[in-house]
Image (cartoon, rainbow, N blue to C red; front, side):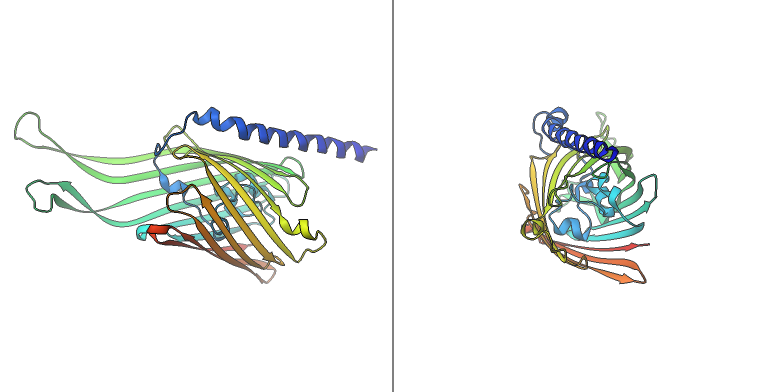
Length: 339
């Protein structure tokens, strides 16, 4: 009798959580954003996807769990990480820009899962110029300069029930756009010179929920990313995924076919849809693909991965390819290791 009461209580709680997720998905975007806006934020590097698995699946990752890279999409997903470990991702971004991500997860028995991550951008060395009408080039060279951008995050997630988890993340952002020389002409030919340094640093927050429905491995995730007192890419994400192999033959466990769909409502662009698929064989070999809708350049994504067991530890090697149309293509390489 006692077990039946607990079972009924859990069912009622799960149904309420599902209803809450649906209601929030319909109301929160309108409350936060109001009318649509285009190009209304800075710190665009925050939006770059990372991880061989997430990006190969078209960044349809809000409803995925058990992976350190969930910190970058929905922090509630790390509640299902089974073993502590770390992951590293390198992205060969457009225009010879390098994007690096490092993540660590620490699993506790009673207090949930903790995580930290670091994101770094390397733009290389650039040439500083200033307009000069007397130079046949139209500008004057003032030497080289570099830009520094990075973000540091600390995440936490825990299971509320066996099907529901909550998670959050606090992130520190730093941006240094280099020194700028300003000339002033206060009514005379005399030129005044001043050097300004463009540095910005602040905190931002992510919040996420995750719900396992119990039907055919169907999962629902929702997150709000980059909540801050700055004009950065605040984004609402709502995702659903399920195992299509369960629809065909629920008794067969040697392979999975995951279908994932994410709907995004960003501050600085119109709504977007991410679609992703993954075929896995015995949790050791993976083939992935995806597509991103309503993007100016991004579209098709492809990738593969393999899990290698080394002395009862798992080494993950993953690769993803993204077609950027006129801007070429982007490759990502990631490595993960569980302790």
